[in-house]
Length: 83
View 1: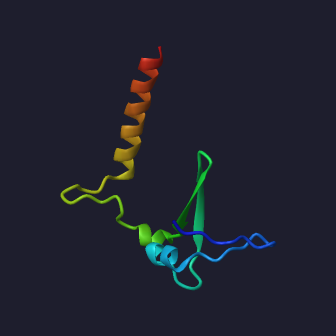
View 2 (view 1 turned 90 degrees about the vertical axis):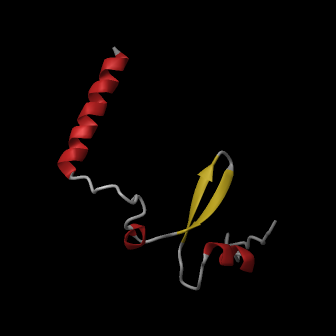
View 3 (view 1 turned 45 degrees about the vertical axis):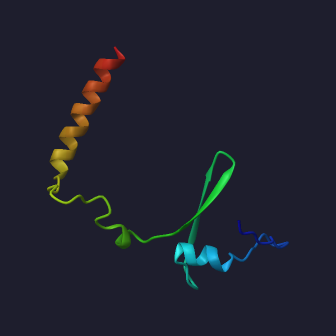
């Protein structure tokens, strides 16, 4: 386990092993995710880096019209279950 000290200004230095694990270099931004009393540190990514992250081989792209239709079908099914 790694630790660092928080300064009076609320600042800390991420240990070298933590920076290496996240692939952080000088000037990179980090995000903090708070879940059930724990904090996770993530490397902030630009939208450009996320392109294709959900792509699956052999899966064709879906149009906006197809997405809207799937959402409408799901909403209809959900409304039927609630009744």
